[in-house]
Each structure stands twice: as structure tokens, then as C-alpha cells.
Image (cartoon, rainbow, N blue to C red):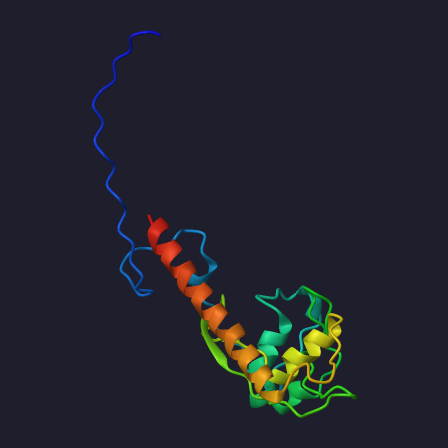
Length: 178
């Protein structure tokens, strides 16, 4: 076909991948997890309520903010009209379903996954919250379907899957750091 000459190529050097989330490499410039964090909000009971509450920006789902405040601040636990503007949903439901065959844990586990613009981490759902979410999405419990220990295992799988996904994200960021 034609004659062409090409310069001998040198094989590319494979990039080194650091799996250490605290590596010295700088993260990608647009990563929200590595931007300056604003001052953490205090208890709303001790704050002045802003005139225009809708003008405040939300850094994440409202139920994640409340995950800590329900435990730490009794005033927030009583506000039922809080709606997460990102999905128009009320706070997560920890109430057993009317026809629920057994009680489930209400305990929530804090993840190792940091939240943007705060020093806190994401909080995983309780067994009860997961059950209620399954019902909300159309699942119906049947005899011999699930046992309480199955829900415990589902939560463990869910949480571990998220932790491993976060580790993969850190690997990807380390690979693409400039």
C-alpha cells in the first residue's frame, strides 16, 4: 500500500495507583469533598430563624442533616413539615408498618464516607428505614419471605457495598489527580 515511516515508539509507562485515601497527591480540582468546609451549623433552637428560609442552599439531602440533629437537638425532632427539596420527601420513617410481622432495629450506622461541606459523614439507614423504603417502592411482605436476621444481613450488605464503592472512588481520584 504505501510506504510510511514511523518513529520507534517507547512503551507508555503505566500510572501508579495509590489506594491510600490520605495520599500526598492533590485531588481533582472540581471535587466537592476537598473544598473549604463552612462552619458547622449549631442547634436551631439557639439560632435566630432567617426571614427567608428558602434562600438557604442545601449541601445534601435534608434527612442526612437530621440524622445527627434528631439525636442532638430535641427541637428538630418535632418538626414534621421539613421536606427535602431535592426529592420532596419527608424525613425518613422509623415507624413500624401497620402489618409488619416483627420489630426491626432503629439503630443507624455512621459511614466512613464524608459529606461535602461538613465534618460529618453520611449515615446509613436503620433496618426499619430500609423496610419502610422497600414497602414505599412496592414490595409486599409474604409468609416465609424475610426474617429479622435477613434484614440485618441486607443492611450489612448495603453498607459494605457503599463503603467499597467509596474506596473505588478514592482509587479513581488518586489515579486522576493532577
